[in-house]
Amino acid sequence: MVNRGDAAASRTRILSRRDMLQVGLVGTVGLTLPRLLEARTPVSAATGTSRSARSCIFIMLSGGPSQIDTLDPKPEAPIDIRGQYTPISTAVPGTYVCEMLPKLAKLADRYTLIRSMSHTVSTHVGAAHVTNSGKSDGNFRNGEPYFGSVMAKLRPSEESVPSYVWLHDMLVGTRKWGQHAGGGILGPAYAPMLIGKDFDTPADPDFRVAALDTAPGVSRDKLIERRELLRRLEGDPRGWTLTREIQSLDTFQQKAIDLVTSPSAKSAFDVTEEPAEVRDRYGMHPLGQYLLMSRRLIEAGVRLVGVCGCTGAPPGFPDPPLRQVWDTHDAYFNEFKEGGGHMYGTGLFGLGLSLPRLDQAVSALFEDLESRGLLDETLVVMVGDFGRTPKFEGKGRGRGHWPNVYTSLLAGGPIRKGFVYGASDRHGAEVGAGQPVSPENFGATIYQALGVSPHAALDPATPQIRVSPGEPVWDVFA
Image (cartoon, rainbow, N blue to C red):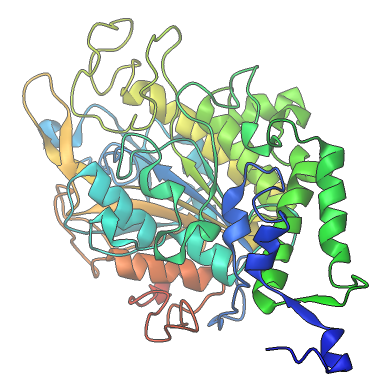
């Protein structure tokens, strides 16, 4: 309690969060990024590697692509297992991929394949949670934070951009954004900025990032006025000072205002600023334009960009189920028959549509990052929720869910180039040579590559909770 008779004490009044609410400065800044206003000052984490990536582009192939029909073909297996595609050689002698990935085959000396990924969760919701959290428990309600949320806390962006951005709606926990919309136990301050859903993607000429809009009735000039008011509070002639909590709140609030008012920050989200030939190289489809946007975002300082690997629907398709195009069970949407009707077709859920677009977009990303000198400081991860069954589910059907063994791709930063870790058995059914890579070890590998020790405390208040319970797969590091 302040002694009113103490002249020195009367000159200093502590401005608390409650005071801020009373004077109307919290919640009235006029932003559509409220989670930034709930943040606390992030902590640092010990790094375990001498060289690490600064940022990460995490490509989530939602639905679970077949390992056999993509990056782990089985040319010696029977036809009912090896499928319709022929393996092709790559830039790495002795390593083969599907014939539908010729560009990635030529770039195989840029990345590592982990062919012994494995877990036990066979539902999309649970497996997507496992893949994005690096924890084997498929219960998305347990609040395990995703990689981007952890990086937002431990390695926040130093620029006027969000630390964590997720591109395109993905099925995790609900039919909409689900767990991706939150920060798990870390709280909403570490949730991603969410962009795109259904047909609302940067491949649409009318696309715009609505999340960068100010609140209705609040102009850019008004935001700047409020920011200046916040900055003057510490030097207020009445002697107000800010508590540590409010100083932290002010930091994140100003960052949110900067994002909305800064032309350079907003331009990071605008792929239309790219030359037409660059956009065409990535592909004028959702995945291509999202990966181009992800490159612009990590250039601007975003720490982790998650990308739902939605390659898009066939031209003229009337509905927007774009989240899980890799869920190749059978002839989904059989009424759309033009070139489609099965998992190898060019209709929705057809590998004949998705694989060429994936090959185009990811190869363009690698080449673009490399030409700009960004690949050494950018970790690129490409993985699905699980793999697919070696045998087809029945006549006219595709492959089912299969978490027993599948393949992931890692590139950039400290990751080895032209390397294959582990193997599946001769039918792609179980882990063969090498140790299974659990979600925990996969997660620890990602954190290690990003300069965050898996053994670091997630929060100083709970030092017993570590970033990851796993151990990195050291063999994949250069």
